[in-house]
Image (cartoon, rainbow, N blue to C red; front, side):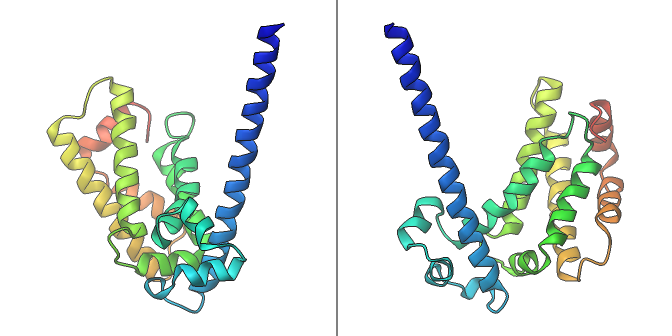
Length: 205
């Protein structure tokens, strides 16, 4: 009987936690929607937290409960796609297929990400994208190989990720003329041969 009461209490706690998380995500999406509206008329670097919260009827306290600053908000929104798309690499999806999803998402939010990629803040989406994909690839290769990356491979991976983000920025700011499929193919073909060999060995390309 005591064990049943304990389990019921734990189940109730899990439900409460899920409800709180869902409510938090709802607030995050409201803040992101307000940010997108602000970005239609104002450069990212000039948008204030006050502008964002007034646009969605939330408080500054709510904003700072979820985000450190406006760039953190932009990066969270960016992560909603990238982590979802890239998490499928090695589980039926290749790097190329995940890149297509990433570019399609950026294109579907063209106005938002055009402004986001214009920002040169230290916490900008460009720097966030680089750090995110570099760490993701390092973890993925390490998991597949069961050993740390060697110095040469880590150098090639960092160079490739930096170049990929630069070309993504160039694509965004020049009007996204290439399709997501074309951009994905270009980035896969630009992979250094030694890095491509490792990716191919583990079925990632």
